[in-house]
Structure formats: structure tokens, C-alpha cells
Image 1 (cartoon, rainbow, N blue to C red):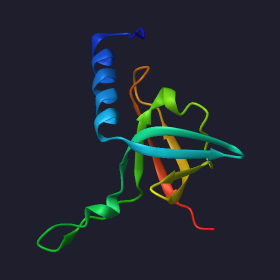
Image 2: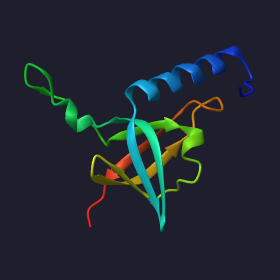
Image 3: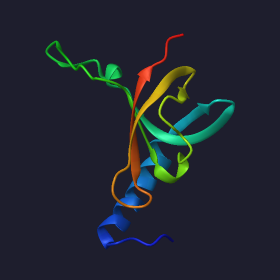
Length: 111
């Protein structure tokens, strides 16, 4: 069990871990010749389509939410492969708490 500054952070860490376990998919991070696998929740705004009455939902970029401690070696510019599609790892955000979900904005990787 990790030490938390308060009960709120501990509760969030438990909820975040459950979300990744239940909704997570496999992601592969590649940095140079090193490959690392992690589980995370992938959100692709383009897959949302229409909200109804012809209103289109436009998202900026897909996101992958992972536990911070599973992606410590990942750096900006590394590639991320999800379901055979490759993305660049662009932004890494660490939320509060030691094991809470981290988010990344990923961009399409075109070679």
C-alpha cells in the first residue's frame, strides 16, 4: 500500500485503478529500441460521431489515461501503438496522488 497525503488521494487512486482494470486496453510504447506495454483507457474523440440532430462532436486529439507508475520511462516523442494504429506521445500530465490516472494527448503518426 502506498502512502497518501490524505484520504481523498487514496480514494482516487483506488477508483483510478479500477477504471483502468475494467475499461483498459493494451498499449505499446516504443522509445528507440525499447518497447514497454501498459494498460490504459483510450478515448478517441473522432469515434464519438454525432451527438444527435446532426450535431458533430469535434475532438482535438485522442487521449490515453494510464497509471503513472506504469509509464515512468515514456518520454515526449515516443510512439504509442493501440490496436495497430501508431501515435506520437505528445503531452504527459501527472494528476494529484501517487498512483492516479495520468493523461496523454496523442497525435496521429504518419510516416
